[in-house]
Length: 319
Ligand code: NAI
Image (tube, rainbow, N blue to C red):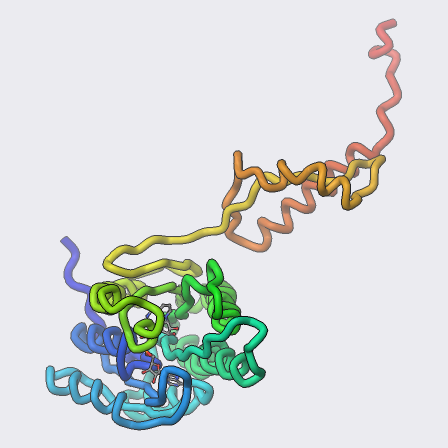
């Protein structure tokens, strides 16, 4: 049996770690020997105000248990400052958990510029800013583990969360590309769509569910994905209640809506709609190269059919 997963000597930065999921990640990493930067702006769930108490509380909790932690109170928009705290306190940065988040739920027509911009700033730009600041250290150390926090609202959409859904699925795209760019530096990046009772979800979930979906049923996945022996990268997981599931894209076989002799028209699309939408014999592409390769295949098939039929040879004439 392999031993427990330890993080001795590793430095982890958890954003939005003053409560909820982030707090749980920070506690579990510290328990496993990591030095933890507990970042939290300490504002409301709508992104208003700020305070040092949320981060301080978690740092004190970790220290009381004999762990190593330092607080940072900056907004994730200023990633350099968060990473600077890690470097000053512990001299390195190995793992970044992009977790900080807020909500500005409104039905689409009522979303103001501020509601839109603030959500993109905290979730998408914040994760970009923090990760970009940590990236050069990870490259230099030839080691890095990154988590992006997406959401079922991003994957499937959710009424009243157009701003949030856009940012959350954006984080999957960011994670996918970082997994490719980080590959040769042993930097692995994955995205999770968690479900847990928290200050954020108590605004939308019934109290029984908030109590039942404990953050401790999510944190072990995050910690596992960030271990040095875990090679998983570029993946997306739904996680909650102790259940974990991996997601992937599924593509129908599709239909080519033109031939060498007939143009592609709205009608040819309509007439192929059933085939376009039929998931029988579907595939699961994993790279954009695979996606393009299929198009090249379609072009060459059409080219082939455009070539004039071979002139019959004397032998084929059966003389
Ligand atoms: P939470 O509200 O309990 O914790 C979020 C923390 O982030 C708060 O302590 C807050 O002060 C901090 N924060 C907010 N803006 C910040 C900023 N600009 N800079 C630094 N810290 C900031 O929320 P919860 O539920 O723990 O959510 C954590 C992450 O998981 C979020 O990204 C959220 O969108 C995501 N998520 C959570 C789900 C759930 O079921 N709890 C569902 C899907 C996604």
